[in-house]
Amino acid sequence: MKAVMVTGPGVNEFVEVEHPGVGPNDVLVKVRACGICGSDHMYTMYGGIPPRQGATPLGHEPAGEVIEIGANVRDVAVGDHVVTNPMAAADGITGSGGAQGALSGYLVLIDAVAGTHYRVIPKDIPFEVAALNEPMAVARHAVNRSGAAAGEKAVVFGAGPIGLGALLSLKAKGVAHVVVIDVLPTRLAKALQVGADAVINSLEEDVSARLIELHGAAAPVVGVRTTRPNTDVYIDAAGVAAVPTTVFGIVKQGARLVIPAVHKKPVEVDFGALLTTEISIIMSMGYPTEIFEVTDDIIANWQKYQLIISDRFDGADALQALELAATPGAADKVMVTFD
View 1 (cartoon, rainbow, N blue to C red):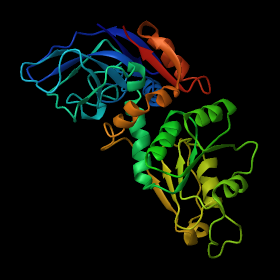
View 2 (view 1 turned 45 degrees about the vertical axis):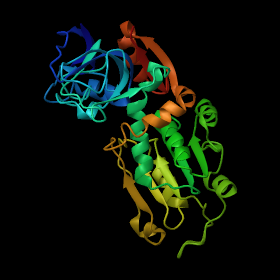
View 3 (view 1 turned 135 degrees about the vertical axis):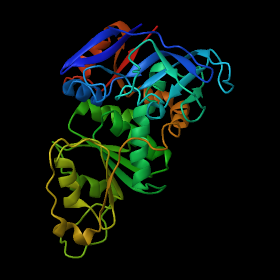
């Protein structure tokens, strides 16, 4: 079969690989959809991931159909639709340095355990929506790390896939009011479609003043003369220095800033100025427990999640899909589907 692999720095190619075999405890999945992640471009630029430098299979956002099971497998049947846990793969993280990638025809789940390696989903959920499960788990982990609770007020910076996923998870947690901030009108319009209570274009509006209108004014902070928004949680899904810098200048006492975004440049922080705010700065990476936690919300609200997908490609055009996803500003969530 053919699999998309990083074959050198900046080079992706279709490579012929052996069709995976199925052992007595394994589950063979026909990949039906796979999302493209920003990290796929990073792996390409690096020329792969050790120990597979120059030969890294890509694709870690799969959904598919079970087509064969081992003799000892009991919790899934041929024909079931599933999402998988790339981080639990026995042969290395799927599409992120492991032996297999989901931008291929098939995945074999070695020593597969239901609830650990895969989860069966209803057959009426489109495969392309189910394939959002992995990035939405990243967003859910950020929300879990924030401790956001029912009745609180939150802000999400960045209306890309992770930001929209965070919006949906915040609403699922019962957060009372969620504002999404971005600089692109098309993204802000989509955020409203997905369920944002309000949006702010930070190029055109004063973020602090608008948040005070939306969330009210917080109690004064000792040593700070400015009035600040009564916002409880900020999530940085943008990864640009302007986001934490903005938050540091407007945060109320005891608020939380969670950063799931990858910052490629250092951010200067004046901890002296932040001391009396008692802000919690929380980093967030991956999905230690959230990979199948988020699945229930996707099943219940798949029409909203479907709005996150911006571009679709057939499997034969996976290289073009990777190229589009790597072009700044050209697309939001790129999805590859397979017959």
